[in-house]
Image 1 (cartoon, rainbow, N blue to C red):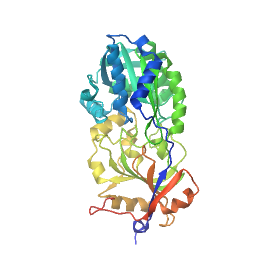
Image 2: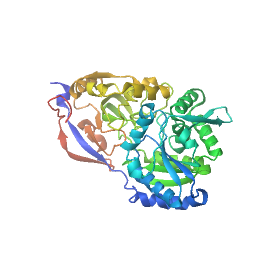
Image 3: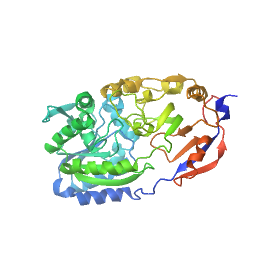
Length: 418
């Protein structure tokens, strides 16, 4: 009998704090009032709202509440995609990504001006060229809206958030590629901060709307920040975000099964901070967890074929490989100077075949000792399935609850997990 037939799994729940915001729209309006929008942004000002490609919880509500205030002031506001090379590096692809997240013209009631054209607004004191979306450059003010979160590639005082969106996302494909080239010699932090500071110095960034999410992927904090205060405030918010990052509850895992990866889940498809792994030659990851093998089953619908990060997996399925948009994936990976993230791992006709091969590559383990974890994706870690060999490690953990009885893996007629 194969190991896969002998395995017993059980569902668990991690008890995450109940600290999500109940009324997100009210929180946005309250923050905007506190930040003094009306003292800076005036009637008839044109305002570009910069929105990225991450799957931020309540994104449409957050942006919609901001639009409402700008309309009340009497501004001419519009949306610009601030997502570098994502969406296949095309204006229409980026417009479609915004629609996926509910940020459509119909819902928000303002235009989306999507273009890959940029202007060069100058250079930083270090000589780094500063690129800016051409439509955003025409506005009186730009307001970036983004989640503050630990970056998947580096550790610093400023990582993924408003400063990065300003420096990289608003530079479109040309600016993003220029940034990643500079990262190789100067490091992420120095380049991101230098570029963002210059655009703030040019008084282009009126405010930023920062969002923090809790371990349940819910909106936990919203803060409106005047442009000149973004760097200082973001550093403080990043420290809070680190404590809110959901993690796998085990340090040693033989096999991690991931149902889906995608750009809206993480910039690298799977959050490298969660899996403790990267094939990128110039990225950093935590020492833990240590995972022997990773099996990725599918791409998310929202990623639109972009399979960046599949190179971090060891095994996948034929259906995932068939669903890859190679031009989009290659463009994203090459813009980020990380072609390794596009490498396609061993792939098989169905889940059962892939799982069998993965289990054959975790060493001389038995069904009683194999350490297996099955998650939906690296954003959703509240509920997961684990092999019963891991039960003794969580029985004394009050943060984890076992749900139901152990069960065997079940496959449909096509050999895929049910």
